[in-house]
Length: 201
Image (tube, rainbow, N blue to C red; front, side, top):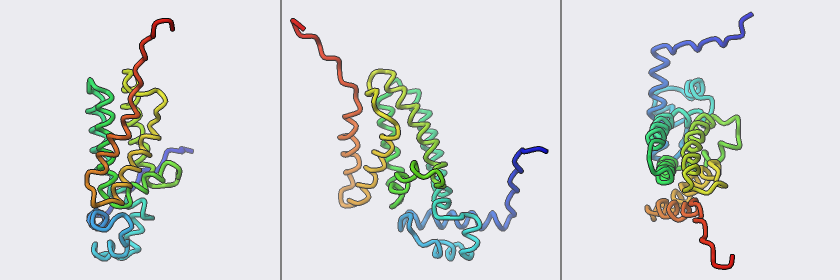
């Protein structure tokens, strides 16, 4: 017997309309209220019942994952562009800055992304994994060029950038905080120059 997976059936037109309305309302609500916005309110504004929302998105993280796919596509495309840079360390730092901006776009997203690596069942894992792979390629290039320390890991960098986004989220009165923290912390990325030998050493 064949063990090939059965292809997913295409959505009916009415189901697709409901899906698109729910996604649009979720995007608006998450931007205005954060990722803990009421799912019941999202369903109501989309003109459907909460049961319809759960048929399309079985939990909040699944809905968050769908909302963030557009931003994910943009971040991955940017990583491919930066991978051709002749300044690998600068490229890595620029991409991490884009991650901070992305994580700060919706209140609560940074916290959710920080939790995703430790939860294999999280729907946000499908966002985290490709971001981790893209970042690891940029980090490896920067390390190979000798400009970034060899003991730096992409997992630490992603947790760091999400933590910076979370700190900025908690301090809305200081819009420059994320940029300052990123620049301050990333100074520690750079490889130490080899000290010149002193006479008699």
